[in-house]
Image 1 (cartoon, rainbow, N blue to C red):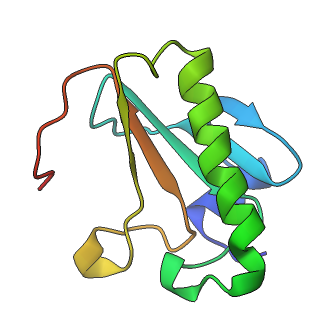
Image 2 (image 1 turned 180 degrees about the vertical axis):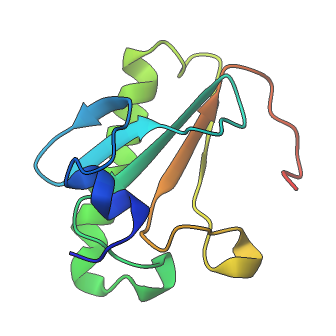
Length: 114
């Protein structure tokens, strides 16, 4: 596994406020939240960017999205709404090169996002 911040969280070398985990996915609260609810969903197997995901990663990417949606429903966020964001590379706002999605909720989110 690569040695990104998120890989170190998966290996439990760095503490995180984990809110969901299964065999392939880990989710934890963002330490610099951009909304009242800001949770990161990551595959445990590191894929550096969405652009580097391969066709064989399709099932894992789908599971990532479904895990986020299930979390939103379970936490009562789905009825009012939430946003899922995946940043890709520097100009896209990606700062940790371990594919992850942001679940943002808990307030009305504006558009365009930034």
